[in-house]
Image (cartoon, rainbow, N blue to C red; front, side, top):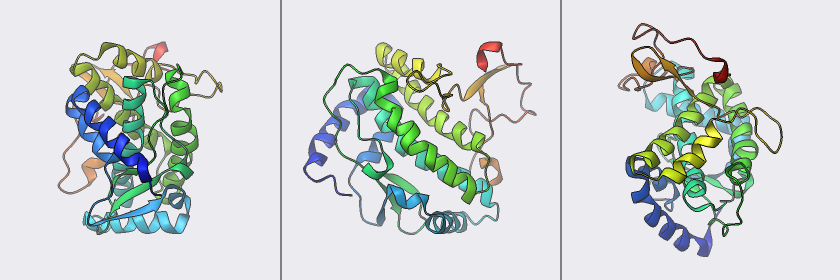
Amino acid sequence: MEAGGEREPLAALCDALRPRLGAAGIYLAALEPPGPGEIVLPGEALLDPATLAELLAVYARSLATRDDQAAASMWAQYLFSFVLAPPLAVACLTGRRMPGRLDELSIRLDAASRTPRGIVVGAPAEPQGETIFALLEDWVFATLVPLVAAIGVAGRLGERILWSNAGVAAVAILDGLAATGETEATARGTAMIDTLVWPSSGRRNPLFRPYRPAAGRERVRRACCLRTALPGIERCDGCPDYFLAPVAPPSPADG
């Protein structure tokens, strides 16, 4: 999909928002135009089992691993970071809604490894005073829900792992906002992450609290992303490896 004349205002918006995200501003690079050495696929192409299986197989080979599940989880982490982080940042900082249905975006991929590199999507609409839930509803339920289901089947992964990956990508944006003192924007996004039930539909919020407290550590992921099984990829800071430290029991509020 070509964003056409909307690329320039979108690029300008990204330039304005990037400093307000601190280290997490790097995620807005997902909205840059496709570059040399990249291919672009319609978002809906990722729902085709044959297409998705090929993407995951090529990516696994690029990592020189036979652990297809770990490779699929890592691939999904890249994808979810680029699919979720930009609209979340734009929503939190500007109150604007980005087009968020899967048929409204395309996926940029490295031509050799098929690693996700970003998305091609139109510019956000002007603010309408919508809640954070309204701004992100299409991204979560019309895009992430079918992607998680498709990757779960193709990669033989439990959806709990995949939703943990998506939730961690969201928290990375909130951490960036907090680090730069964006108090209101951080609170807006945190309210979404901390809400168990999506208000408009009554469905469980699949991004709900991807971390839980741990004794002696700031936080650990609810589900391991399996990256420690991949050669040359370091353990993440929130690794739930129980040999690192005992995990504190969840409170009733943790769900």
